[in-house]
Length: 153
Image 1 (cartoon, rainbow, N blue to C red):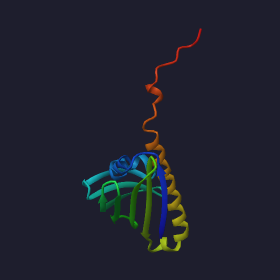
Image 2 (cartoon, helix red, strand yellow):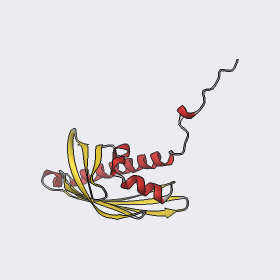
Image 3 (cartoon, rainbow, N blue to C red):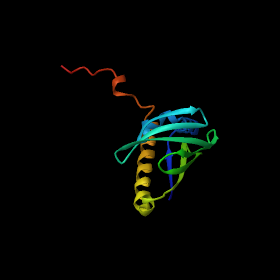
Image 4 (cartoon, rainbow, N blue to C red):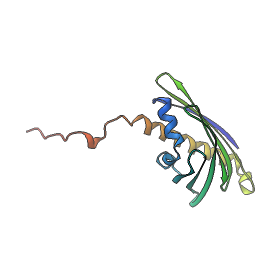
């Protein structure tokens, strides 16, 4: 099963890359992620994710880490073996992020490959839209940072 997606985020490449490549941020923008932590920073990490009502622990390794250009990972211990490739490139005042993923489905999942692919693509698109929204609003003022309005008399 393979999929590709592309999104443009109105933030500098350095900022987008740093946020995506720091796996501790994953639960902030990926819906199924419960937690993520480095085992060996820049080399391997573990995640806990909710899948179809169950929690699974995954162990992943970083297969490419090129600052501001590329961040690739592959699952080494997971219910489904997969690889995710991220590339980053400057465009206008922002960053184009391209994501390519592939997963090796086996057993019962192979029979549901079409449905699994559509669901995975929807989830990835939603996650990357969440990433875009999160990074693009970083400079916005929080309502709690604004002084209270006084009622007009």
